[in-house]
Length: 145
Ligand SMILES: Cc1cc2nc3c(=O)[nH]c(=O)nc-3n(C[C@H](O)[C@H](O)[C@H](O)COP(=O)(O)O)c2cc1C
Image 1 (cartoon, protein in one colour):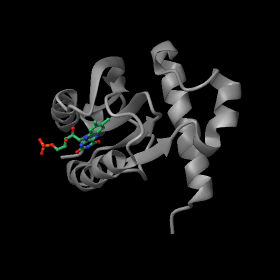
Image 2 (cartoon, helix red, strand yellow):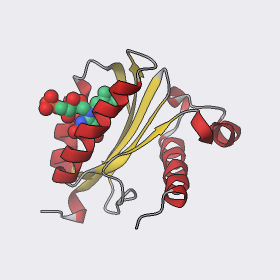
Image 3 (cartoon, protein in one colour):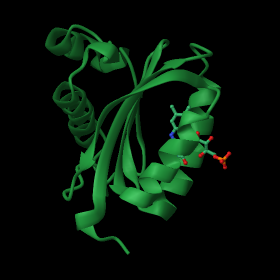
Image 4 (tube, helix red, strand yellow):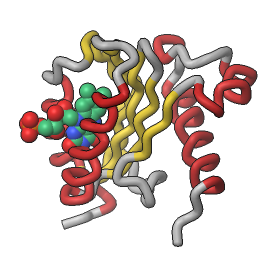
């Protein structure tokens, strides 16, 4: 059951192992869209050559199980939790998994706001706001039908 009272939000960052491999991102996105939709999980994955930063939200059980799997994924290492806690209100409802390459076309804007994409320096609030800026930008650029 999708009981909002049990919803959590989890944000982490990690170090990429392979660097600039776009096939890798496609593989992650394909499985994420399918499995997250099934589990009622939504979120956003931002990445650069060096880092991943991902927000996951949904019911605690499925989110925890997914994160346990992601932790063991060899495409990245040195995962660090930025935020974990109750989040009755989902913020990425339209996104089984959004993806954004950084710096990319958002780069100049985001660099000005946050001094570049360097997740180890982000507070929980900065990380969330950063991903929400990407979400808002993408929702304007690619509005839902
Ligand atoms: C940075 C990163 C983010 C990922 N995000 C998700 C995700 O949101 N959903 C998902 O199902 N798998 C995600 N994966 C892939 C999982 O780690 C795992 O490979 C996939 O769920 C298949 O799991 P299985 O081999 O146990 O079936 C991610 C992997 C990485 C490296």
